[in-house]
Length: 191
Image (tube, rainbow, N blue to C red; front, side, top):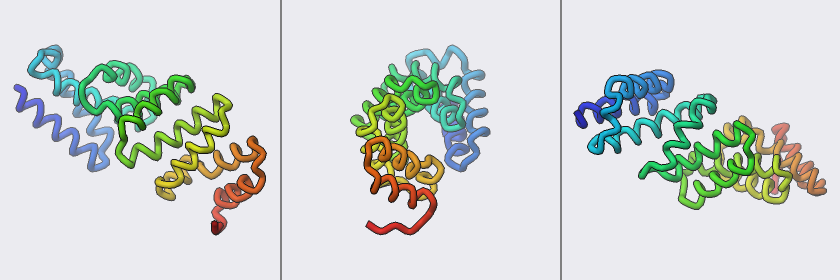
């Protein structure tokens, strides 16, 4: 049965890597339904943890944070993927406006070491948490760290330049705020 579960897991995982996110989620859900309580048996526990982690990640990436949160809270006790689990738990807390817990989990994730595609997201989300906690100096640093490694598409989607503009204005850094304003508007800015 363990081999059967792993084959079905790989099939679902491949769907997610191909960008078929909803299909992948449906496949993971089907595995849980098909094998039920047997996944909690010691020989399948690792498979269960992998399935639940991936489900939580996908739900969070789809913006279904209320569904993802209990999965991610359970996943915090799992053995593998601790950094990613902390990231997605922080992501869910941020979506729920629990900024203190979000910042804590995101910081843990960064300390554990995230892959680059999550690292810049974690810095941006920490910036948002700090901003909402009125810790503008730390927010600015986190937004800057995110902008250093994030691609242009993410910077635009996450509105990092706008966040930096607003944070810089609050901190009284007019020149910086003006520069970030120009970057937000798409102007070519050097230095």
